Image (cartoon, rainbow, N blue to C red; front, side, top):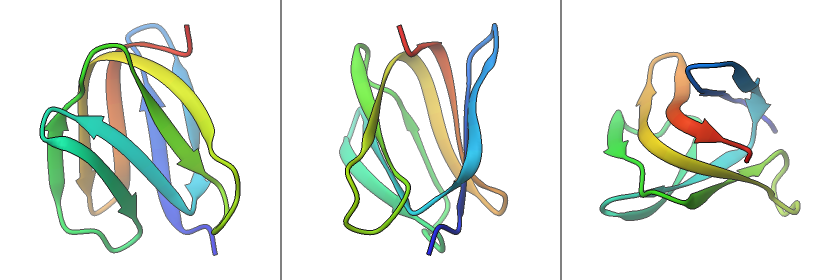
Length: 87
């Protein structure tokens, strides 16, 4: 069931805004798999890494290159504010 609301935003555009199963974020403390119900979380993104977006359980991830910024898990879901994404 896809029930984690995920937004990926850069200063120029909104890259993605949809409900997904899980997102794997490469933060400065390592990789973290974020699913609905995850505890509040914040990390600085590692430069030149990928975010892996799983739309369904067991599905293949969509990989999106990101550079700079941070990720925050809160009551409204997971938001990634990146300096650059998808390039």
